[in-house]
Amino acid sequence: MYESKRRLGLLTIGMLLVAGWAGATEYHVSVQGKADAPGTAKKPLRTIQSAANLAMPGDTITVHGGIYRERIDPPRGGTSEDQRIVYQAAPGEKVTISGAEEAKGWEHQSGNVWLLFLPNDYFGAYNPFFIPLQGDWFFPLKQEHKVGAVYFNGNEINEAAALEDLYGTCHGKKWYSKSDNQGTWIWANFVGMPPDGEVNPNKENVEISKRRAVFYPSKPNIDYITVRGFELTKAANPWSPPTTEQIGLIGTGWSKGWIIENNEITRARCTGLTLGKNFDRMDGLMDYGYNAHYQLVERVIARGDWTKENMGGHLVRNNTIAYCGQSGIVGSHGAAFSTITGNVIHDIFMYKSFDGFEQAGIKFHAPVDTLISNNLIYNSGCKGIWLDWMSQGARVTGNVLFNHQEQDLFVEVNHGPLLVDNNILLSDESVRDASQGSAYVHNLFGGKVVQRAEHERLTQYFKPHSTELVGRSKIFDGDDRFYNNIVMDDSGLRSYNNCKEEVWMDGNLFLYKAVPADKLEKKAQFDQEADTRFRIRNNGGKVFLELDLNAEWAKGQTRDLITTEMLGKTQITRQTFDHADGSSVAIDTDLFGKPRNAKNPFPGPVELSGSVKKIQIWPRK
Image 1 (cartoon, helix red, strand yellow):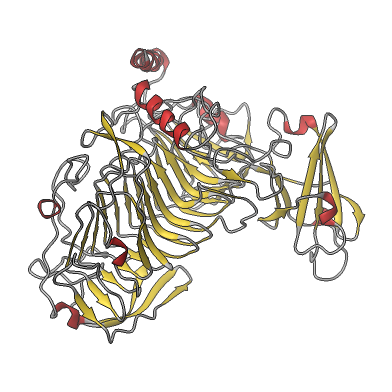
Image 2 (cartoon, one colour; image 1 turned 90 degrees about the horizontal axis):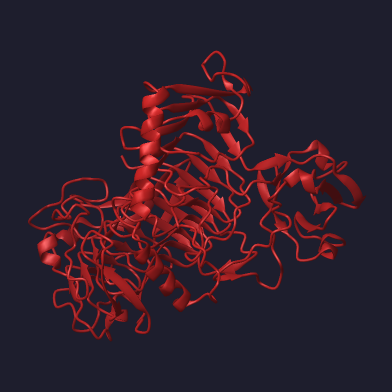
């Protein structure tokens, strides 16, 4: 049924092409444009959505400088990599697409408290100041939260638990709202604005979020779209667990082949960018928890459209994603076969006015054959990268993570293979491993490496490089590999002492008081005089690591070059650690792409020929 509907949709597009569309068209959009314009460079359209309604596969929409307060809902996508629909900011021009509106008409109440009233027709069908923020694995922390937000000078201000909290002593700017059949009232305390003189939000840059998303398709299978070069900001989007449709400030929906590149994605109420999940009528009908998620996975597999040919395969590169309330990027199933590379993700889940189990710089469920490479992820109140359920064939390589209040990397209930190589992981806890079948190769672990046994949950696994179900199995702790890493925390790798399954370790370097797992590594190398104190310096976009790296470490032990053949197959999936196309992997280059010494590679992510005390880790030279 699904395939027949998809073929019918493609046939309809084909008929449109034959009937009236010949050759690619470039539509122009400008804040000086007109609704009834043809969309040429001289006569541009006024809104991006107007151009989206006209664009056909192969067309380009070029948006010129200015602020566009609208949500783009693409009615159709492209048909192939060569016949995309491209949305791009005009070169050299700043284009902002905002989910917020300027808020004028505040009435003074008392002190620093002001009131804004908005009738119901202002919001239409979606009123974010009426809709509560809620969902699976969401914890409100003793107060109700709304999906909406108030912004002062571009920054989100905190939501108060009750109206009375705005009066008297108010620590920092706060807002509170209520809605009824007359409209919506928003109170805000603008304490400290300005530091002296009259306080008047009508003379300041105050905005309220209005739109659920900034760029998101309302229908599935809107494929092959490119979004390039925009500032995308301030959406009133809902909580994004893996068990409901995940609506980001920008999102692909349930689709294939998007390219999202060179954008600045900021200030989502919840998640900045979502790659799936699909809408399902069964969503929310079961109490959340393991069983609800397990049944959802079974339904996704049974539908038959979650395949490499139909879904995922997105490219997310060179974006900045910041100041989002829940996560930077999430994807449940829809992130499979995708590449996430070159992105800077920071200041995620820093407000902490609510809590939950879905917060991370990147959180994916079922990222089959997904590549997460060369990203800079730092300063979050949560985890850096969280790979949860069925990360089969995924690879995490060349990333730099630091200053996360939880783990840099958390891998949960996966059967492998998962390859983690050439990463710099410097938070207090570098890795938490509640999976099996992972290989950790040439990483720098600045914090703890914790193995957490997980024996209760049954998760699915597939044929190699596909989503064709093979079976279901519990997690057996172990079946992991640690080769040629640098370990700095005193706890070392002792967390793996009690694994019930075999663990392979060799070529690892333990600094200062760090120790290997008991009896698992016969040729461990130690430098008990090493100085493990380090400092991260972020100087105007350039990030430096100050740490003593000693060239003498190469002389203390001969190490092997790590390859697919050496890593073997995982216990449950019987799959090798290889590329997504099935070709063999060799960790023969370092974090910077420099060739490794094949006869004796240097430990850690950087291949050194001489000692260094400071290296630039972002951007890569």
